[in-house]
Amino acid sequence: MAQLILNHLTKDFGGKGADRVRPAVSDVSLALRKQGFLALLGPSGCGKTTVLRMIAGFEQPTDGSIELGERRLSDATRVLPPEKHNMAMVFQSYALWPHMTVAENVGYPLKVRGISG
Image 1 (cartoon, rainbow, N blue to C red):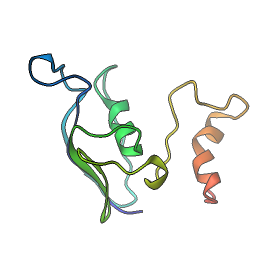
Image 2 (image 1 turned 180 degrees about the vertical axis):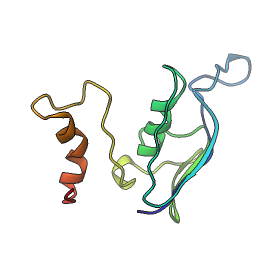
Image 3 (image 1 turned 30 degrees about the horizontal axis):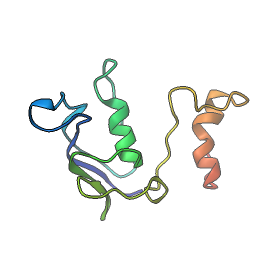
Image 4 (image 1 turned 90 degrees about the horizontal axis):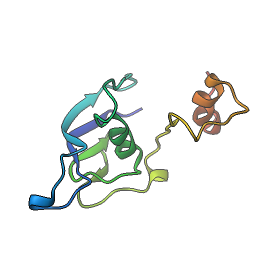
């Protein structure tokens, strides 16, 4: 797996100027080493889900960029569609399969790709 890099990632859901609301994510930078593991922790409303949605390609950054190895996945001018990100995301609720265990839900994206544990 290639290195994931978030470079000054910002996401606003508001307008411009005086109408601008507080950013959901503000100037987040990190480099996750190859085969690394990352946990995002924080209170409700701090931007964890927004960061994950941008990494997965469901949201476009207002500023900054997301790179996976040598590929730019998204920035303020363009975002590759989610299917081109080669990412998997298991949602907190509503999108879980009720007939599967927690482990089966988490492992499903790997199963689809033919990767065994």
